[in-house]
Amino acid sequence: MIDHIRGRICYKELNLVVIECGGVGYACRTSIQTAGAVGRNDDEGMLYTRLTVREDEISLYGFASRSERACFDQLTSVTGVGPKAALAILSDLTPDRFALAVAGGDYKTFTKIKGIGTKTAQRIVLELKDKVAKSVQAEGLPAAPAMTGSGSTEEAMAALQVLGYSQGEVAGVLSTLDPALPSSELIRLSLQKLGKNMFG
Image: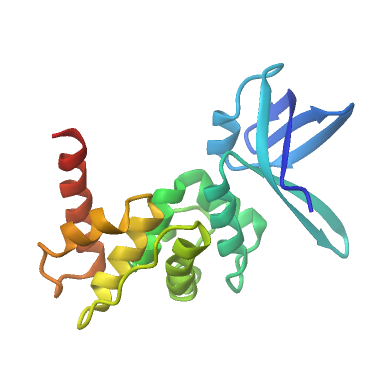
């Protein structure tokens, strides 16, 4: 319903930003990272938003980027993960780190976040692996090509494209790696090689 809000930042807390737009102050619950990135009081700021409506509450959530909002949507689709837990996760993890953890099956990353137990962390990874891959198409990026014999390679391909690398860049690097490696290791090694390509 409300895609984004742009206006004067009139109040900030650790997990809350109030933006005045058209004489109305919109209180947006945010991650700590978004609250820090959006700007200071009296600056002009913009948040991508998500409105949630429940029987006893209507809440507006704000995000510094579309990718963070997409992560919030994915997290709140997981059984047992509500908006509060999703914001706690996004306060600790950037969208890139979130995608890497899910694609790599690294549920332990989520257990380090206050309020996220082992079962919930495992459920996040289990339920979102496919959604992380599908978000490649949702962001308008090329679909990962079919690679025979290695689910790990496909997972790494999807995760790296979510991070913004092109299909050609990723395919070229992954072709030099052992497809028998777990996806988390393929992602780590690929990022090392892609970093050298960018800055070397």
